Amino acid sequence: MVQGNQMKPTSSVLSLHGRQRPVVIAGPCSAESRTQVLETANLLATSGKVSFFRAGLWKPRTRPNAFEGLGERALPWLMEAQKATGLTAMTEVATPEHVEAVLRSGMKAIWIGARTTVSPFAVQALAEALQGTDLLVMVKNPMHADLKLWMGAIERVARTTKGEVCALHRGFSSYGTSEFRNAPMWEIPIALRAEMPDIPMFCDPSHITGNPDKLRDVSQRAMNLGMEGLMIESHLEPSQALSDAEQQVTPDNLHQMLDHLEIPVTHHVSHSDREDLEGLRLQIDSVDEQLMQMLHKRMDLARSIGALKQKNKWSLLSVARWREIIRSRTEWAQHHGLNTEFLGKVLGSVHEESIRVQGDEADRKRSEKPKKNQS
Ligand code: PEP
Ligand code: MN
Image (cartoon, rainbow, N blue to C red):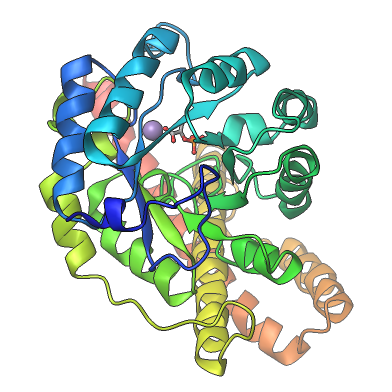
C-alpha cells in the first residue's frame, strides 16, 4: 500500500498533523497533457514516499510567448490523478478566478507562488476568495528577501481560511550569477519559523537549485533544519518539459534521492542544540555565499577600472584614493562594531587583489592593440 493512502486523513479537511517527515509534494512544473498527468502521478505513487501531486495550470512566466499553462481545462486531469493514485492534487493559484475554479473542482490543496506573494493586493484578493473555505494553502516566499512580506501573506490567508496554512521556501532571486537559481538564504525561513512556530515549513529545492545537481544537498539541509516536507518538480522526460526543463527529475530519480535522505528526529516546539547549530551553520553558508558574490562584483569593477586606466595611461595605484578608502571603511567598521585591525587586514588583501586584477586587465587591453592595428 502506498504511503499516500496510509496518510490519507479521515476527515475531508486536510491536515499535516502527525504525518511522517518528509511530507513530499511532487509532480511536473506544468500539466502538459492528460496522459502526462496520469502517468506521472502513477509513477510517483509507486514508491509510497509521495503524498501530494503538484502540477501548474496557470504558469507565471517571466516573459510573454513562453508556455503559459493549459489553464482550467487541465484541472479535471489532476482530480482524476488524485482519484486514481490517492495522492492529494494541488496547483498554484494567482487570482480569485483560479481559486473559484479550484473550489468548483473539489481540489483540497493549493499554493500561492512567489510572484504573487510579493503583492499584498494580490494576496488579499486571494485571501478574500478563500474566505471560509478549508483548503490547505502553502504560501511560497516572495521573490525577494523580505521576511515581513512573507509573514504578511501567511497572516492574510490564515485570517480568512479554516484550512491549514503552511510556508514554502523556494529561495530568493538575485541579479547576476549565483550558484543557485534562487539563493536559499536559510536565515529567512529560520527567522520565519522563530516568528511563527506553528506554521509548518516546506522547502522547494527545485526552484532553489534550478538544476538536479544540488537537489539532494538542499533537501538534506531542509530536513536537518526540521522542515516538514519538500516540494520537488518531477517530469517523465525532463528535457522535453514545456517549463522549467533544466530542473525537473524523473520520478525514478526522485525516489532514489528520497531514499538517500537522512531524516533527523525533530521536536517541532523545542529545538535541540544540534538543530540550532545546523541553523547557525546554514546562516554562515548563506552569508559566505553573499560575501563571494560581493567580492566577485568588486573584482569585476576593478577590471573595468583597469581598462579605463590603461586607455588613459593613468597610474594603477592612487595613494589618495587608498587613504580615503581606509579612512571611510574604518569609520564604517567602527559603526558596525567590527575590530578595525581585522578590517585593515581584510581591506589590505582585497585592495592588493584589486590592483592585481586591474593590472591584468590593463595588460590584456595593451596586448589587444597591436592585433587591431595589423588588421
Ligand atoms: C512553480 O512552482 O512551478 C513556480 C512557478 O514556482 P515559484 O512561484 O516558486 O517560482
Ligand atoms: Mn516550476
